[in-house]
Image 1 (cartoon, rainbow, N blue to C red):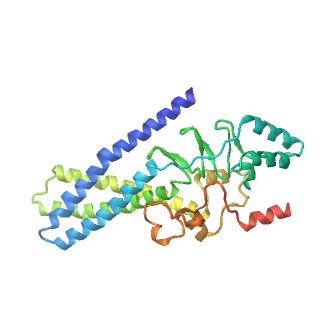
Image 2 (image 1 turned 180 degrees about the vertical axis):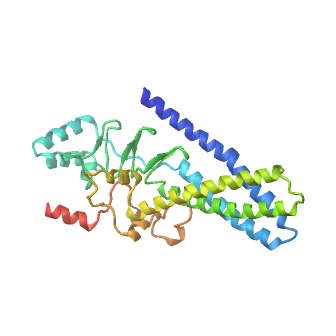
Image 3 (image 1 turned 30 degrees about the vertical axis):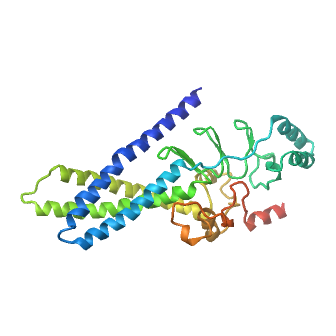
Length: 315
């Protein structure tokens, strides 16, 4: 009961964060940039006005669509389920070395059985990872989210700012959202700063009116967002190029796992394509990779690197 109450509180906070961003921050930033900074330039410098507005709205639309997609795109749930009878039989068979025989029988019953999926991550005793709360076998990189109450494919983390888990199906949108939020906040901060200084200089004597106050608030907000998100976004690009999730990165810090090879690191290019797809033209657009992008996979089957294969052969 306590865990459920805590999960409800986290999700309530997520809805609160989204409400604040949508109802307050976005309108405030839009008003300050468009109506206080860009449009006043139409008379003295129409070319600058049009350029500022076009660049801003391109970034703004990409940011909003990415934000929408990361909120409302399901992170990806484990697609199969086996009943307790089969699970108990499998665990019993494992003790007596009959796992392969029982696995074949389970596979005959369910062609999507996780027992047919090669797994790089197993329990210490060699068995497939299994979630007792979801009653599902967990494929590689899947983890249980206590806030969503289910297992998520390639779970990265649960993000209260979008009130959703970040996983296999929406990680691209999350990366794009962070990227466009960083770029947009930096662009707005620089432009508003120039507009703010110009306004102060043109007004003699210098007055600190509601306009200047709005400039100041938005500028401070954009600087703070830029500073925080630059490091955060850079961290996730580092994880992306190493083909690691936040959970896997934290687990890697465990002294007992520090020297373990990351089995999913396929090199920077393949790691990148596994998230963004094979079509270069869609990389930076908040749309799903084309179905023809074989690099993306299905979230259940994961290609492993040659180092892992060599280690398995030596074992």
